[in-house]
Image 1: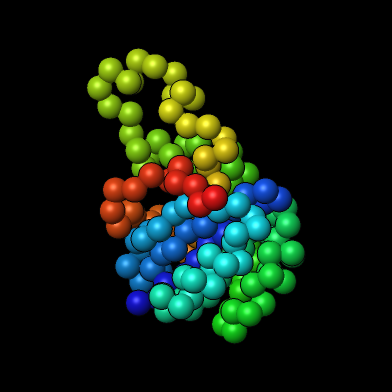
Image 2: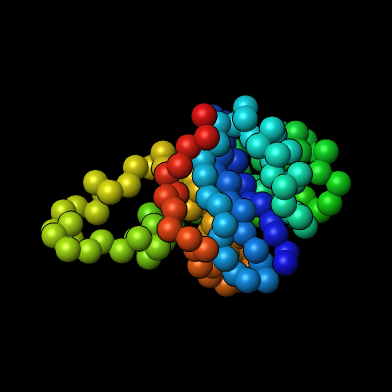
Length: 145
């Protein structure tokens, strides 16, 4: 197993995905307040065998990379251009609208503040040049506050 953490960095919040590159599966996808990110990653690396961390090269990526310098393995900075925009479409690929909900505007089902974890997933998929599946039914809107 090759577990990786992917982070979509931001000033106040970050999207974080824990995935297995070999299995092409996402095991966790959450949104973390930026000030809690370092502690959360420390906790993850004690419970999971993380081989690398991939960080989007946008807002605050340098600061986050410095905060995570305790991670003694590879930390990669990768292009994240348009990931938040692309996350809206990816959300509906992962969670298709069914039934009568299909008659409602798609925008009512997601808010931009909940797209950071999907943006982190897109960064990972772009890096690996493949799509990932979800290991279980979970909500990408989960916040760690």
